[in-house]
Amino acid sequence: MDPIGKFEDSQANDELGQAVGFLRSKCPGFQPRVGIILGSGLGDLAESIHSVASIPYREIPGFPVAHVSGHAGRLIMGRLAGTEVVALQGRCHFYEGWHGAQASLPVRTLLGLGIELLILSNASGGVNPRFHSGQIVLIDSHIDGMFRTGLSSRAVGSAPNVVGRHRVSYDRQWIDRAQRTALKLGFSLPTGTYWATLGPNYETRAEYRMFRNLGADMVGMSTVPEANIAFEHQVDVLAFSIVTNVANSDIASVTDHADVLNWSARAKLQLLPLVQELLLEYFQSDL
Ligand code: HPA
Image (cartoon, rainbow, N blue to C red):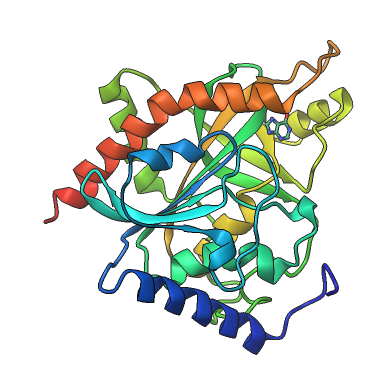
């Protein structure tokens, strides 16, 4: 298959229908309210979900199977802090060569299941020198440096007809809620602009410097396509970026995937209680 060619809409919609239908048949009557995509090193947050079903991606029709270590490749439906959630334990990345329709099927499936909020997480390099390794930052804007066409849901079926009319922004209300909840838990959550590259390589010092000068605070290889598709569907997005290495554009240093996983694992100790508290406060209080 042409790796970056376009799928026919009908084919993409058929695949979406099959994935959503398959998951509904596995959990009849289960209606997730929140979708969660767990990035590098964050997958085992899913262990805190009281699982109703845990399904390897390879069993879900059309799902791409992630190849990157730190990405387990399972979809979990269950309850977190009493709220019905569907979580993706690991994502595939465009640098693995997936076609836009394949790579975006997981997020389109979460949206197709009718979630009200999409929580995204990733590991990133900090280009803002005020950040430190292990810090959690809320993404409040992004720069799409993937330079790939065909990654919107318009290009892969199932798109609402909102060309140029949907908002392209992370939900302000959820950012405020997350910041207030973090303070209650004893830490502060800065906001930042995330630059998405296609990857898979980390950056040269000159690239880190350029990203900083062009307005980015973090750089990573995911999240933006998922956020854009959720924006098109008018679903609120709350995105957490774990800074796993801070770029010093003047001193040579090596970014290593093991460090990335290590720092994400530490940040999880703050991220999990934060997400649980948010769900308790904003989904359980409306019961
Ligand atoms: N660059 C891109 N992606 C990343 C980095 C980085 O420095 N760290 C973790 N993910």
